[in-house]
Length: 126
Image (tube, rainbow, N blue to C red; front, side, top):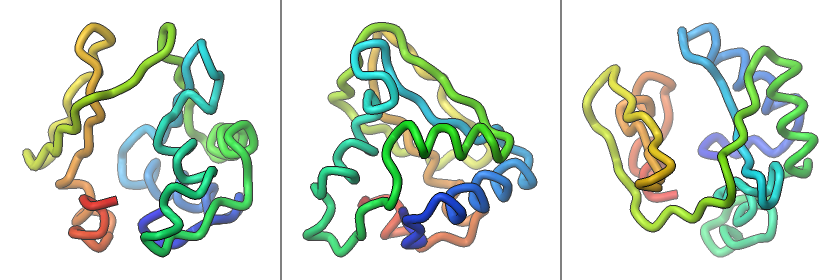
């Protein structure tokens, strides 16, 4: 999303890049809404970021999940439904906070933006 990628091929390319850089690319859903359980993707797909200048994806949640899996990533399913109320921006290089279903929070590894050559302010704002 930070790079303006909206196609399945672009998603697959990013998935492979993440794996090459030593990380496990993944997508998630939840048991209440399947792959649309990812609130960020739901907001993106339904145009909630249109006013920020982000084009909507050319794929739905299931197609995106399949593309990530085909390109070597994993699909995770959260238990029940989830609705993060807090955003943690982690700036500690090389460290990722583990998700906790009893303390739901949206975790952003801010340090990863530099590693992947992303626009850091844009990455952290969106």
